[in-house]
Length: 412
Image (tube, one colour):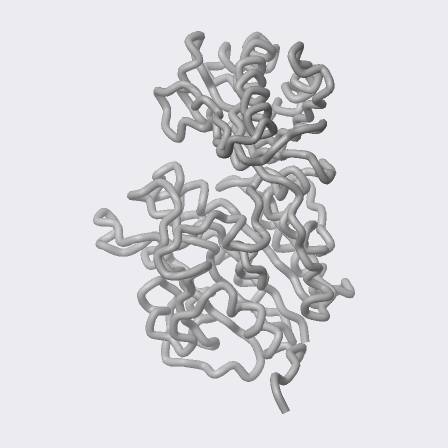
């Protein structure tokens, strides 16, 4: 029996007045998710623990059965590994944003207008960067999806114990990166990062891609802001941990990076785009092909668009994206035979917060012989009445392995 965890990134929300005090998921027309709920067992899940606000990285680690408090060293290494940069022992990796800054280095758009094209050309220029004060430090940039990028510092005497440069809100300069301990390695790394941020602006503010964006009335990607410093994590192989043959299907470098560190096969997709404009047909076809034709028996799938809409405060777009996933993806997945599907979100991204929150997320498990409950619709409050009750992310793999008959008895 095969198993699939489908994570709709940031799908869960809080009641919104303009939606009649429903969440976007509750207000959405989702007949296929509702049918899955009616034929399955439902509940709600705290990705890490009640009230803990998870990142997408720590949430996915927990859902895959890892303790994020033990294996998480920072987001950077996962993001870098996910876009094909080999992070070596001693390297320090960062998740970055292509952002827009004015001549005073005030950040006016943290995501550079949700840039989708041209970042590869910008990165080619940035990879020429050297620092006069640190000639032996190799500086590696790599574009990820949309406005995202990664930065890897390679050389002697570096540390991941440094703060972020991200100002979090527009109207401020990038934060001064500071050492988080008194070691010379942390102080050196912080100084390098502060110089790198300034130099990214100097190198690409007049890049042809940015000049064209300005000409077209778009925000230029003229500065790179790093955050989420981390060193190479030590993660046990998911296949060895659970005895499965696993694969990861995802749009974002971050989730692909988590999959790679967990030893999962990464199923590459073309023409995905990402965000609310993602090619759901491509993702759907990839899932179905893998389930039907590959030797993999366990899959992690991540679909990102609802999270993007939540971060941007877009109620209508979030609701419509959920409806599109229901219509394009869920409708076809329900036709698959001999598979357990665990449908959930990794965290809530409320429109009112425009960021992650610690609210629990709804869950459905569908498949043969599940103990069907009385819930007939998929939503945050409906699923709270379901037979799974309230679980944690760390419970997911145990539940799935038991249903798939991969679990081993504990005791005599």
